[in-house]
Length: 388
Image (tube, rainbow, N blue to C red; front, side, top):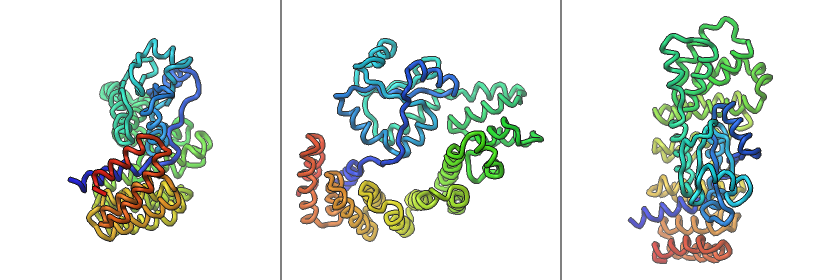
């Protein structure tokens, strides 16, 4: 039981994953509604107050997360509204807020899709986003028209887009439409190909690459790069689901050929995800070492996350835990933050080094005092649970 508690604390001490994070809309509420209508998207609203501790924690630990940013930037229009100022006060008249934060999801018609009170962590927030998309799923409307025999270009495009948004497979519908087209080089068909290229191990992905220059002319180079990344990630996810290493290799190879600027980080992160899922400690540790050297570099946050991930997944493997200890020590020494020293102390304890763990915990406690009561409480909780 004590081991489980310590591993849970390691996850809490890992800190946020820094990346692009959520990009928040800076227009008015009316402008956001109009954009939601045009793009057929749901608006996510972080209804917060400046004095709210849980609001600050989400802003610090959840919204900057790379996976959160990638998912919410793609699927939602994101807004932050201070509920005690200007537009926030107006918003509250139509959409009541009695606790902070309140997370609203509202469609382009102004109707509430979902409302959740209280802060979320990264995993629960991503699951919440998935739930909202399933609630806002309008693919059945297009499916009904399709079953009646409708095959118009606009219907097929909207059907594919709705399926993609809801996380359902659109490849059958997309292939049916594209196979019926004599000229794939029209502007509409190029946009259709782009929207449908959702998996790197698909014929449509190859079409997008073949017509990449023309599609970039319409949508921009960055949009195509992002689609390549998402499609390759989807194939990695499939590789993990079916435990098929050949799919992993295919996704990595296509990233190298079509988006080389991010290929190395993608390769190592994908390998870590795959081997962690399959329980392959040897290859997981190998990928971790390369990631620490080539991607994390001198970034203490990356090193800290990597060490905590190893400890969480392979706490019973001596070699993996030795690797986690080294990475945690490097993160603590370079970063000089209480979270890093706390993570280091926890891993030392799991490795049976109670004396060194106590020293690292005391260093964490000293640094935590400048962060506030919540930080001190977290460190003291570890010290109490471990009996140091």
